Length: 266
Image (cartoon, rainbow, N blue to C red; front, side, top):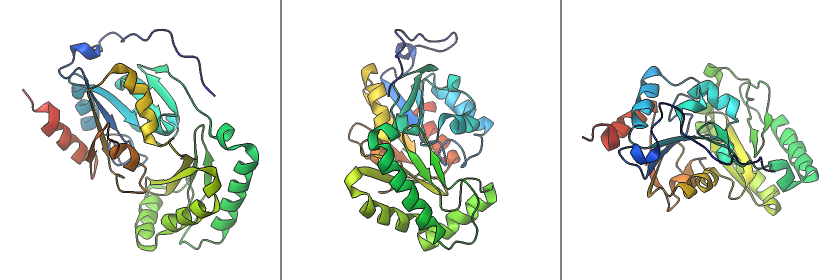
């Protein structure tokens, strides 16, 4: 499924066209959770100031796995970015105007989707973890998100589960079994954030967003993310040969690396 593309997209007042920026053929693309902000929290004023300054130097984009409404709770507005990519770029915007969209449900089919949902619910009913909350499966336009603890967990509960998961490998084990069970569907299972993992067709990872920026003819594409290890939801775009990848450990580390790469350049 796709949405009509706008015939022309113009730069809003006060936003420099790409050719007027200090590095006109460079774009910086950012994961959201753990990169621009702490998981499910709004970015700091310092981060917003850094991104505003960076936009004088390069094009700027976010690439998140969550749906757009959740991402905007963290980054405020599409107007702060040249490109906004939700659901790995399956929902995409340039200068606040929508680009093409894709549908997970149409790709896999209703019957296969129902089989998968039933399998997930049965599996999670047998998973013994310290606490469970609500919303264990979240259907999105271009993927589904699965959370063993449930997406209704509080911030502290998310932090506690992430620590527990690192010790016990709850998500990794579930992903391993789902890869075996649904191998015929050609899906990717990517662990991301603190409490969940995404499921989407192969090739619909964050590299999907690159098709939206390629027509602009950027010579250099930087990507910053924290889950850049194999199996993490930043891995594919981080390791893509078209991209210069940067692993970050926190939003503060993101700002430090940007200072070193761009903002302290005369």
